[in-house]
Image (cartoon, rainbow, N blue to C red; front, top):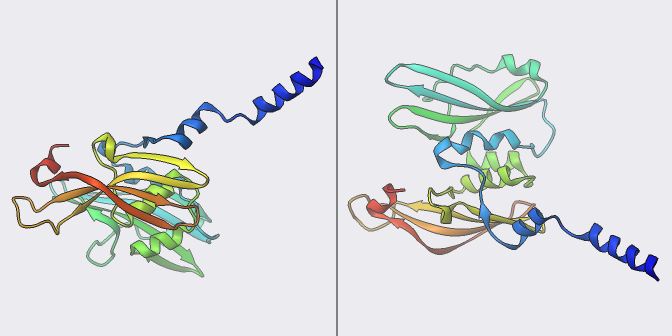
Length: 219
């Protein structure tokens, strides 16, 4: 009788979820990235391409107008790295469109480059990025996928939360809009609840105003 009790107890303990799993599955937690640290350069390091490729590379490029300094950094890569020499790291932003361009007053952008059949191809659209990612394998891919639709992490905690359950990520993120009626800054941001499934199905709903006008510049 006593032996049977211990067997049942051991079975219950083995089936019990770890505290971290229970926490993430049952409530929202803070996304472990900081908007102050340019998190967009950290996410690609976890990308798993949708299909095997001869070679691929995800890089960041920046120019500083004050010093005329140009920096090209490979963030992630896969396949036959010997093919890397085929890629010209001296980017001309006028001729080659990047992903997530910005960096005023300088310039910065990410570049997703694929080599197949000895041909170098620059993925220059959000749709192309999403096709490259394919199914959602991890948190970083989910955040990058959301960013491709314009959903970003906010500076306030309410705008950078997530939970994960049954293969689905649910986020509280921010989406900025310039369609707000004429005002000093013509800026408004909504707090969005965003759901992304493992097969890259996305659903969103507004859950309130995150900020508007000059308040958007205070965070």
